[in-house]
Length: 158
Length: 158
DNA sequence: TCGAATTACTTCGCGTACGAAGTATTCGCA
DNA sequence: TGCGAATACTTCGTACGCGAAGTAATTCGA
Image: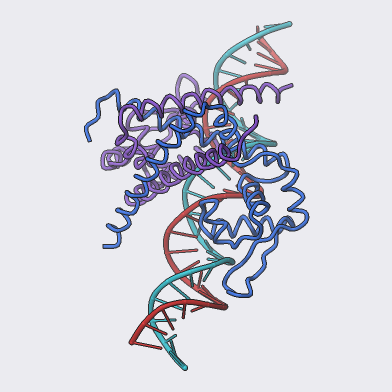
């Protein structure tokens, strides 16, 4: 795909801005979490459990886009702090459900911010047209990334 | 700011998609880096040094949006691998410049992918109108985030 | 039905990633 | 001019974050 220099520069700018928005949102979420004695991922986990009830470790992993091995560590530390507990499923004894303790649930209620809060805040100031356009374009990009990922996976299996 | 449920759902979807695009791009960059024996951040550092020449550690930190202490570690490991070397500035002896070794420079030439490659690839398939719209909206968001960050910093100093 | 393949989770080793505290150097101004 | 503040970097402790290898439980097919 041939690119004029101008287009290349615009592309760089978009990547740059996207990275800025993501990392800055993450940084501020972390900061907010610190104020209640949590880390960023821990705040996310508590919010998820409070919203959806008990979740298996795998489900949690998918939700926060991390590997099981990562989430095992996060839950280890949260269990140590008395925020959650592990409960083996009776129907499938391989599965571990994660449940909020009363202490964890109370904390969830006290937390006002959501993950990526800043980003949400500024998003909500966009006009309806801008919001729709943004969603439309991002969806397009996501669909194409999914397509490419699938292609590469198929190529890798050969 | 009052939000109807519909708007809230759309907002969630945008956040979700943005996180997807970012994490997936990062994951694939990491994968590509592995194939030449590097990590994701190391690939980024090599590309930056190859493009801009020697950079101070702080400049490098800003470029990759990380703290100095993080970059110190990354450079430690790259130095150990013989990819870069540290050189103290003569004009300001606090400053450390990072320079590619011949081995590092050769590696830079061999690497075809750029950081966030997938995202760049799909971005370049957008129409000119979509690209312009996306840039326009993201800029708007970035400007507002910057504003909020500045406000909070000012509030924090009180 | 039973053994191989799959699934859910954990463990381990390594590389980020950050903030706080420390060291060396330079700057700024009284 | 000299000394306190600021700057550049490093060190340390802790928490992700991943992939590979390991364990226990379940599924599936001959």
